[in-house]
Image 1 (cartoon, rainbow over the protein chains, first blue to last red):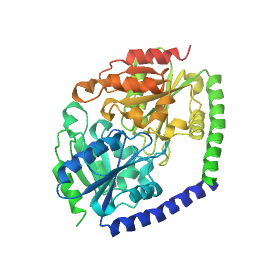
Image 2: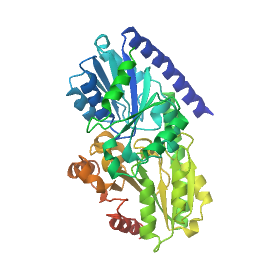
Image 3: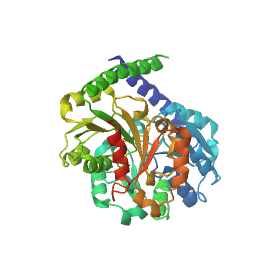
Image 4: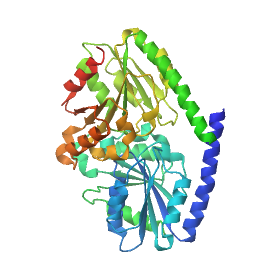
Amino acid sequence: MTRVKVVENILKANDQIAFKNRLLLDKHKTVAVNLMASPGAGKTSLVMRTVEALGSEMRIGAVDGDTASQVDADKIATTGVPVIQINTGGGCRLDANMMQSALEQLPLNEIDLLLIENVGNLVCPANMALGEHARVVVASLPEGDDKPIKYPNIFTKVDAVVINKIDLLPHLDFDLQAFQKLVKGLNPNARIFQVSCKTGQGIDEWAAWLAGLRE
Amino acid sequence: MTRVKVVENILKANDQIAFKNRLLLDKHKTVAVNLMASPGAGKTSLVMRTVEALGSEMRIGAVDGDTASQVDADKIATTGVPVIQINTGGGCRLDANMMQSALEQLPLNEIDLLLIENVGNLVCPANMALGEHARVVVASLPEGDDKPIKYPNIFTKVDAVVINKIDLLPHLDFDLQAFQKLVKGLNPNARIFQVSCKTGQGIDEWAAWLAGLRE
């Protein structure tokens, strides 16, 4: 029983900090989007494609979460946008406290859209609010079309699902219709985007949706 | 400080149960292998290919961990081997207690090799002993060649790394040499296998290594 109580207290404390993060973001009119995915689904590539697509019409910033290293933040920094790397020291998700530290270091009054790349994980990030305005799961074709069955929690808790690596469709056994039906069954309101961060396919539609979040 | 203490106590309690699981496995001369990977890396396919390769020379059993559903266990059951599905109810890894329940339900005196498919996750399973004899991480090409940099903990704690979906090499930007160098840097003793569960490439070598664990 002690264990459960501790977990509940941690989540409650997290929500309070997330609420403060949200107020801070709203004060600066910064829209924050929490990108969640398996390792290697293409979160960093999606951030980079998004900067390419939207960088001329709005000011973008990024927060990058990983258990170790700063390779992703280094990649994103090459686009010229401000980026903060959070290393969780082995932790399987970002939390509101980590996000608070990142927000303190970012020039929020110069950022319209903040893209948060969570730790690669389809389980842990699902229940941990950061103060974000929208939540997105990036799924990639090579992971297989059964992921919504096996990780239903995260798919029910997002505003959009980005299906990445769509260029690999000819080389894989992935049933696109079945996948989308599973997502809609869990989360009828989720927007679904089919993209390839490699070729750029579908990025415009995704970018338009992101831009619409600011309205 | 309370939080850390609770986590330490949970790990200690887990190790004690894992030790009992190990004794039970040893009593039945069952070798258990813990397969860990990102979602969709191909753990279930690897189990099925392994049954195909080794099923005639040894008796195989399987334990399948997922946050929800039993689609993987159902697939494995089609091979005819005994399989137990563990649903973690959202939990991001198997633990020794879950494994103990599974072992109680398996005919261990009829199983030479027990393949344990952990929850799809590169973070949580790394520190949680189940009582297994060997630990393996399955990495797949589409996840990218930088995974050992970003999830070093799990790569340091395994006996072998299986690189799956090698058939996709022509369609991806994956530096096989760089990946293997990163793995060797973290874990010089880890065996590395290149396989394709789709084509069967490399499965024989992997199966021979598994068979060798019983000697």
